[in-house]
Image 1 (tube, rainbow, N blue to C red):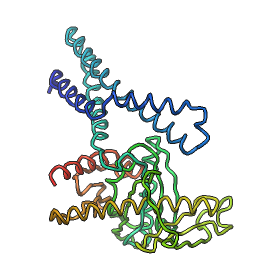
Image 2: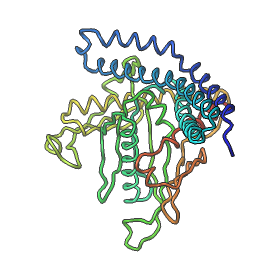
Image 3: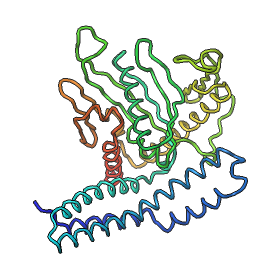
Image 4: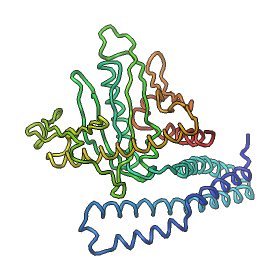
Amino acid sequence: MATDFPAALDQLRSTYTSIRAVMNPEALAASVAELSEKASAPDLWDDPDAAQAVTSQLSHAQTDLEKLNRMGERIDDVETLVEMATEEDDADTLAEAERELVTLRRDLGELEVRTLLSGEYDERDAVVTIRSGAGGVDAADFAEMLLRMYLRWAERHGYPAKVLDTSYAEEAGIKSATFEVKAPYAYGTLSVEAGTHRLVRISPFDNQGRRQTSFAAVEVIPLIEQTDHIDIPENEIKVDVFRSSGPGGQSVNTTDSAVRLTHIPTGIVVSMQNEKSQIQNRAAALVVLQSRLLLLRKEQEQAEKKALAGDVKASWGDQMRSYVLHPYQMVKDLRTEHEVGNTSGVFDGWIDDFIDAGIRWRRQQDVTA
């Protein structure tokens, strides 16, 4: 069936107008100007961490503004292309316009998802922890598969990702791993990945070739900022130091540089071993501990509000996705019903469609709650 170009273009313009209203290009331009002024300060790099934050924010604000403005130009361009093709009855040019329409719909959809990230901490960097669950060695292997999946996803987007801690399993895979992703809206984007992940496959570790179901849990928390004021009294923290495990390297495995912090009132435990010194590992562990306490405080506040409102709806995060490799191949999100058959692509980091569907699903839940 021939494409109704006028209707398709009207729909694109309507979506684009809504996106512009939320993203506010004037405010974006003002932010770019302010950040550019900060970035040009002669003493900027006196504080490397602050300088890195400013330059990163500037880069992403410029990218967002350019992408938003360019999107309007692309809609104008495809409209001109359609007019020319129609006047000259040029089927090849019409086909080109149709391909551009498909690309525009996809790119606008990605931009629209960004506008749905309006939670209190959505703009922040993310700290992700993966833990193997039921399923023995298969679960440990599955946890490592998920770690690689998320690191590949970050790599594809050009997001800096750093593994902070890895606890290796005895036979294969990992017991747990924690990594951070530094990118605007990393927490809001990845937070929909939190929950229980399930894998069904013929176990490569079973000499009888039986089918095995295994589980892994994914936790996503926002990285704290200096303005959060999460103060933890020293007498509430138990500090243990130990020798790092796993693949070696400079300083690793040779000194007691790994650090484990236990927050006594809540029982939250954070360990770090991937930095070279005990001081660095303790500082990194403290940041993650503060981030978890920040999220816990927010969850407690939300629970109190729900209790007052009489809301007893269960959390949406449990048992959220199944990865089936036998007897057929399929990855299916149990909340959004989104599914694909390309399991190898998913494990190689192609998970944007699942994330986008999750963000839209979560917003719909918020609207109907």
